Amino acid sequence: MMQIEVLKSKIHRVTITEANLNYVGSITIDEELMEAANLIEGERVQIWNVTNGERLDTYVIRGRRGSGAICLNGAAARKAQVGDVLIIASYARMEFEEAKTFRPWVVFPDTATNRLVE
Image (cartoon, rainbow, N blue to C red; front, top):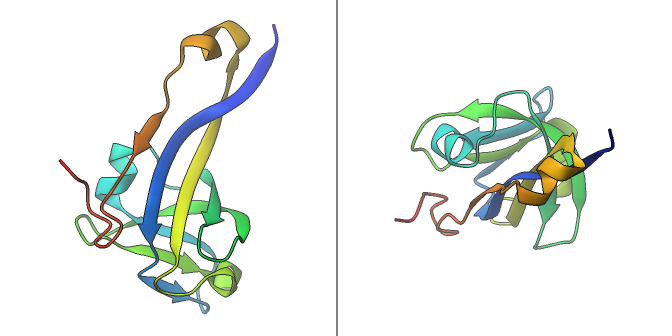
């Protein structure tokens, strides 16, 4: 059976609250945003920096719930600055027929606070 990769999760337009060069790597994401987008700790994500056009792959670390934290860590911290706007996406492999009806989790938080909007 043929498998393809499709968008699984997307957090659309969040603002970087911290860039920590002296950390082992990854992106820290507020736990509420992780849950809303169906992301888990350690999951591979793509980061698209809307502000400067940079793109990178890393993995998720759980941030403090309700904090609005979006922190690029380690070498990734060189790809963005506090205040830059990001899109965070992950993908899943699935059978071609399943992919036709699959609907990803897409979250549109308030870009100013990185909090969920009702």
